[in-house]
Amino acid sequence: MNCIDFRRQCLLEPMRDTPERIAHAETCERCAQHLAEVRSFDLLIASALAVKPPDGLAKEIILKTERRTDRRLPSAWRYGLAASLLLCLVGGLLLSSVKRDLKYDLAEQTLQHVIAEPEALAQHGDVSFSQVEQVAAKVGLAVSDSLARVSYVGTCNLGDKPALHIVLARDSGAVTVLVMPDKPIQAAQTFARGAWRGRLSPFYDGSLALIHTGDMPEVLKIEERVKSIVKPQSYRF
Amino acid sequence: MASNEINFKQLVDSYHQSLYRYAYWLVGKPHIAEDLVQETFLRAWKNMSQLRDMNSAKAWLITILRRERARLYERKQLELVDDFILDELPSDLSNVELNPDILALRSQISKLAEHYKEPLILQVVEGYSLAEIADILSVPAKTVATRLHRARRQLRDSLSDSGSDGTKQGASV
Image 1 (cartoon, one colour):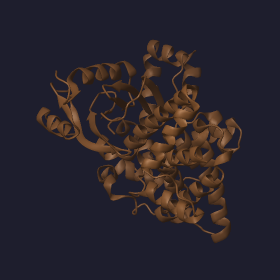
Image 2 (cartoon, one colour):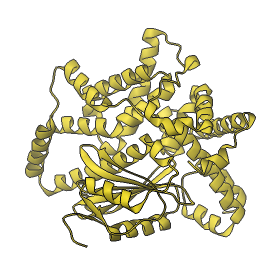
Image 3 (spheres, one colour):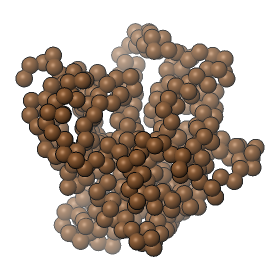
Image 4 (spheres, chains in turn yellow, orange):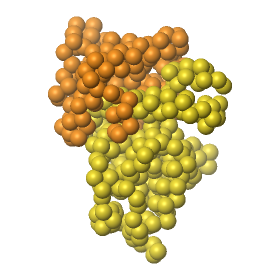
């Protein structure tokens, strides 16, 4: 790939990495800089487009759909029961299929959560280790050492489950860490959406998500670090 | 039918935010965007049997939303694009809304023609490829590429005119 092809592709699909594009950016500093500028602008556009729906919209949709179709959709326990019955009836094939869907939904949920909370990404202050420790304890997590450059820490709910929400300031852009003690997944996966990249991996009985706009190698180091210093309180360091 | 109901709840949980965002930028008014999303899911619920693959659900929902929006315009003869309500956006975006570059950009995005705005949302926020956007919007991929290029150029030009440097500011978001 030459510089003209590289820049043409950058204009068409700035966020889509191909092996050829990555290889060219590694050898051409000017093109790499061009790509970074194009992506920065897209990130700004993405932030501008990120509007949050009214609270409770999902519940409102379910309620209105029930009312207007005169049919009750399953409540939480019915949902669970129906899922269990389906799993028992159809067996392993269906089991793997359902798990794939849930994993897919979790990736979507984590992305949605980060996109819908740009205020968390916009923080610039330094959060102390003791603050991280205190907030983590609220969702049943223990932290044994500090993470570098924490700009935000809070708890949040993904679906009906609590999670620890941390944002790390990095030169290549903010990295959001979501530790979800009650959202299990079977295997790690990476995903991408527009300006955002994400990685989900198993974490004790739950999962860990990292959402970012920067480089994957740096994110993998962060994942390793988080896994080495954060544990459920029920586990000993 | 039970699996349809489970799938429907999953769809609502997973995609109501994406659809609301898309609807908001199409119609420009939060309460109409909310109605539109509601109508979209109602239509989706009635047609759940048509959804063969959950992985293509979002594109399917966006297609329904675009049709519902066309119906809404036919019924009410609405003129919505010219009077975008940016002030009614949720207040919990306070930090970002205070960022003047993002505010300026929101204003410029609201002024973009719809055929520029739609592919921009689909690519930048939803992460669809050119081919996928072409499929959703039922236009050739080359047309999508041209519209995306022009949309970005208009936004860059408008930020330059207003004295903001979007490229540099973007890195700190």
